[in-house]
Amino acid sequence: MDSKHLKYLAVSPQDLMWGTAVNSVGFQDIAPGMPYPPQDHPSRYVFSTDRGRILNEYQLVYITRGKGRFASAALGHGVDVREGSMMLLFPGEWHTYRPDKDSGWKEYWIGFQGSTIDHIVKEGFFSKARPIFNPGLRDELVNLYESAVRVAEECRSSFQQVLGAIAMHILSQAVYSDRNRTFQSSGVLEKMESAKAIIAAEYTHIEPEEIASRLYMSYSAFRKSFRQYTGFSPAKYILDVRFSRVKEELTNTANPVKDIAYSMGFPNYDYFLTAFKRITGQTPSEYREMTGGK
Image (cartoon, rainbow, N blue to C red; front, side, top):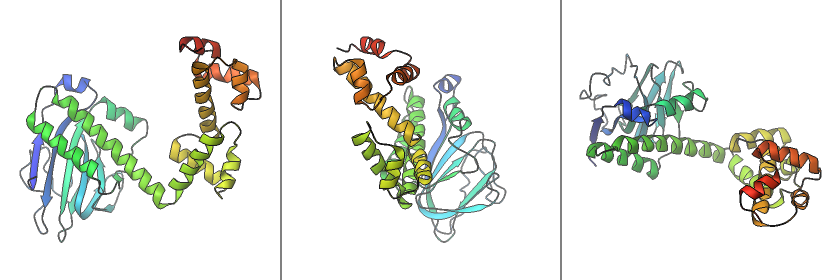
């Protein structure tokens, strides 16, 4: 591709009804010593790196070569960014960034808005206090940005829906890569995958404390790491695996409900019935009938 490509897009009310609409997408390769930012953007995007700027949209800026600095109001200070770093810019939030003069950098960006990202931020998945991700230099992320550039350039019917999906795909891939790199570097990833394997094999009788012991972790450290990794406490994860297997048995076998409950590690049948209805909204017999079980 060329050293620079910028595309700025109009967003209609109908585009916003989709949940995500893209305002801008592009890339530019800033050579060492080159002035930054180049002065060929629309006025609402141009900024002085000394004064910074405030946008009316979210942007994901991905650095694929070189290094530089980033600062924002929520951070209150500057931080280093480098090849493989991604910056999430928030609407209404002052920020500034620039490449190092000696290295320059190559940056990709996509700017977007809509109810989907607003909801995700409101629910706490992203924070102005943590605007930097480090997914690393990944071909799939570069390909997504370059796909977005091509779609924006063609501007075919319903292109905004495609761009909105790409923007959210980039965001989810960035989080996925960043979190798993963090878990891997701390040694947590291997242990949590081992814990999941133990549960998959022994879910009918395994207890969280035993898993922690096998992994040579204190229970408190294991529980915290497992929740961060999966989003579940170990006990809740085991329970969900058990109920998932119960549903399979109800659908695929004619075994009595009580026998299924006992075989899945529920010695208290009344508790099993109460918990199953709380989780599914149905009794086991109703669930079996609904799913066409035997």
